[in-house]
Image (cartoon, rainbow, N blue to C red; front, side, top):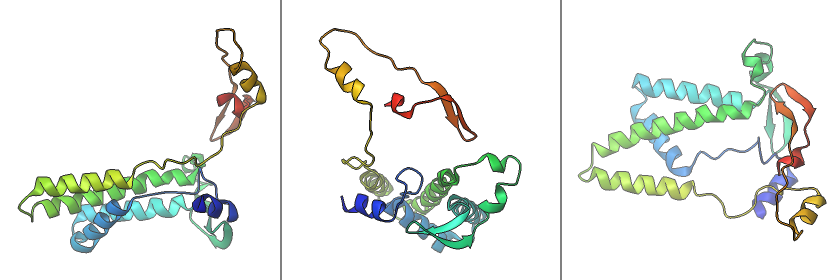
Length: 184
């Protein structure tokens, strides 16, 4: 509840403004950066993670829901063909996640080579990552639906209702008459 209250207070989007990389992967990635930064593969993933991390911040740097006025590279990328189609910069976090995962894997490989029981170390790390990434057991986003769905649900007659969406939404806009509540 405290986290959700914070999101509401700073008007943060729960869909496009949040990312969780995980404590264990970030610690392992930090270890790889600290110990193995001379390796070309480590430098490559640092650069990729940094570039896509900056891209994921969007066109302007936001802090607690407030535009700081700092213009970021995404502002210019919207004028570059093909790159301009990436309308949701936060989705660049996929590459940041991949970078963290690869760097964590490099660190884990190095650690495994230095211990007597590498399988045990791997099992502990995998378990820690799983615990770190466990889905939260609370609702993050309230889903609303038209009241007619409740009426239909409570009917005694057998059968089903299939509300067909007659539109489409993509990165270029909305086509047709899509009612988002129909997807509930």
